[in-house]
Image (cartoon, rainbow, N blue to C red; front, side, top):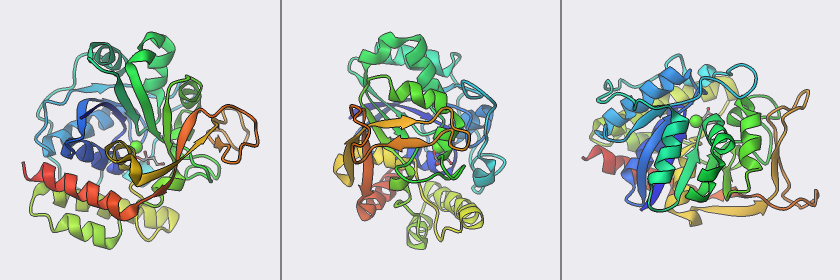
Length: 311
Ligand code: BDR
Ligand code: CA
């Protein structure tokens, strides 16, 4: 299996990403680090622990990370994810406390201790990973690749130009994109194909265990806010696309491209610039997800939920 460190801000779709990682034999989840984003970091940490309790996997270490971005104040996504960050389901209380070190130190020591290079997956504002690379560049050789959910080849969902994770800390994303490490970008242009349709939610609900029912309840709340705020008929389940990309790279088509993030724009701070047609004459620095095999994606996610729930 692929060793993975998962940096997240659960978050409805983050919760599904955690469960997908736990339910796949192709992923070895070494630990979870948390960040502000969909909710304040304290809640994100608590939510990650509650998801691990739901999955009966309190052995997976959780380390709490950034409370805010490198510059400016924390932008919180409670308008989509509710006051708790994962409004909707009844979830069990944590079965284990977070580790005593912070996210950056946990990432550093985990990377250095692992026998093989580790894949870092970031599905929230990417502050923890940026601080790690800025303050401990020696860990770069221990990272197999960074797969992040953020940005878009198109427009934004938080401002007209910027996607939520990129908008929440563009300076951090800039550090990651200019790090020279192998990067895969899973942006809104891809994740808006991963819709939890009524059929998908019904299949979750029909699972005869608390994991399936909790996921159906997560999708129920998430679908409600996506309908209210964006007029979407079904909610896009963004974050698990990163984990699915690791499990089955053929699920997604990729385009090698130069990607940058706007850190200064008056109206466009946090906008990603993806040079799909090589107009800027800059060397490519990322593989950018373009199309998703939607049926195979849900097959993978629902299969993993079934796996986790039957334990
Ligand atoms: C991203 O922002 C959050 O709302 C989701 O968890 C996802 O990581 C989508 O823009
Ligand atoms: Ca997220």
